[in-house]
Image (tube, rainbow over all chains, first blue to last red; front, side, top):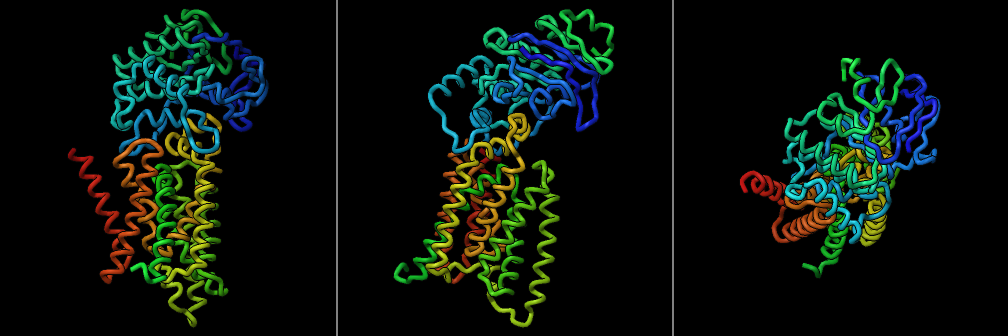
Length: 227
Length: 263
């Protein structure tokens, strides 16, 4: 369970939210909605320990110290410095326990996990191909494998659907559904377009007017024009 | 050819330097630091000129100033993309300092600084070989420790940040390793062309293979074979070693481009 008590989000000393009190149940799939600049991505960064909260605290599984190896994050934008031949597989493999020192080595348990994830995300056709030649949707699914390789208990997705065409978007949502069904993982997803995905979600967190509230159904969000 | 001790020394020194260059060039390429490698080569001149002023060995001067400049570059440059600006500022400052040192040393100016510019592996002494070996072991050891976070933070900086990997510290450590390598490699190819050994081997290797170990191994092979060819050719036909090395590297790189374009 992710629990926020009187959590105030912000950069440096400038707060951007009122105190937030939330409880997100373990293994739920929760959509995060709200206008731009309202603090959705800041909320993720605070969860990831990249931005300290201005006030209040977050506990994950009743622990106050956040273990980043338990949380995976798929950001909205990023550049991969892939060379001519660098494949998605290389990206995934070397993301495994990336914050450990020493030379990287892989054992059988790792390879089994990798093969399982490749099957789960249906990326086997292109994961060994040069990353720079993949389509946007294919890259997104490789990112999913990368995010899951460290067996996280929480997965944060920041606008994963925004630059996908309808077909790729549909496939990606199917893939997320599979993960939600088969893995023990809490998934938080920020999205501006909840139409297609809302029926899959367990609940929503609605950021509005500096605060946010937790709601089980889409209807309470309808009043907000940006949703 | 090997009956001459200077040729034996040249081969040993060349091999040590080529090994380190082959390995480090992989990180220079994946971290997009080719400009920094080039800059550290030029900054070496300041180190050499300064060292000669106070009658130290040129390589010691290069080492000190390169490590110092490397740390500065790592500290100033935050994101990998913005690094160029920090590198440029540090580079121009040190080059200015270098011209000042040369100006101070005008009267007694000898060939020692000049030989750093173009390199001269045929004059390497046994003592220098020990020095090179020590530096090489230190550099490879340092890289082996940080290899894992360094590779992923170069490939995917945003992911690395989300795992709280200290990007800046890693940059600084890599800069120190590059600084040491540059000081070593200047003995072979000289300041002006050190760049080619620091980016060439891995630039070629990454055109052909994927992964982590494979490109490092291939890059090391390219580097060693190139340096050997350079020394051998220089012995039989009277051409500068650095010319042979840069020609081979450029040739192999072009082959790689053509292969990826047409096959």
